[in-house]
Image (cartoon, rainbow, N blue to C red; front, top):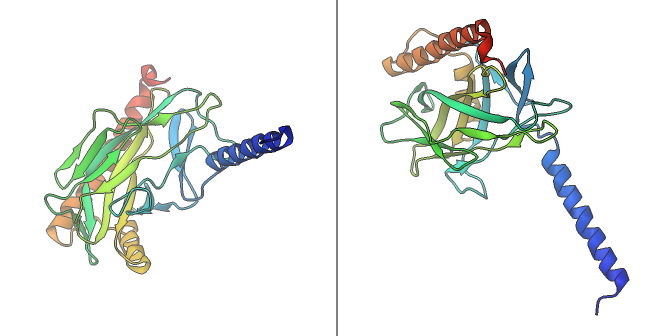
Length: 247
C-alpha cells in the first residue's frame, strides 16, 4: 500500500522528470539550424553552418539513418530560435523547395540518378519530393508554429529512396512566413553511407564549387545553383519594394 509520503515523492519525481524533459526540448542544440529575424526578414545561423563561396548561402548537414527513423531517413537537423531570439508569437513558418536533387559520387557533384527521390515530410506529414527533374511540393510545406512566447523548435523528416546509391545528397530550401520576408535559400547535404572524411570532401566540393562546368551534368547542376541565387535576390528586392508584403 502506497503511503502519502511515497505518493508525494512519486509525484515530485514525475514533475522533476517532466521539467527536465521540457528543459531538454527547449535547450539550444548546436547542430540545429538557428532561426531568427532581422529587418523583417527570416535569417538562419547555427554552430554547424558552412557557407557556399559563390552564393554566400548557408550549408547544413546531417546523416541519413537514425535509430528512430531507420536507415534511410533522419529528422536532423532541427530548426529553432536560440538564445534570446524570438519570432512573432503564434506565427506559422513554412518552407519552399528549390532546384533539383544533387548527388556527390565521391568525385564530383551532379544530378542524382533518375528514380532517386529525397522526401521532406512537414509538420502535417505532407511530403515534398526532390529528384533530378526538380521539386514536387507537398500539399503543405509547414515547418511549424511559434509558441506564445515566440519560440520555435521543430524538425522536418528527410528520407531518401530505399536502396539509393552511397554518396551525399543535396537539396535547396528557404523558409517563409506571412510575417516576414523569406530567408535566403540554404543547402542541406545529407550523407548516405560515406565515412566522415569522404563526407567532408563532398561538403568542401560544394563550398568551393565553381561556375565553370566540368562534367556536363555538374555544369547544369551548378547553373541551377546560380540561378537560384539570382531569383532570390530579385525576390527579396521586389518584396522590400512592395509594402503590402510586410507583416
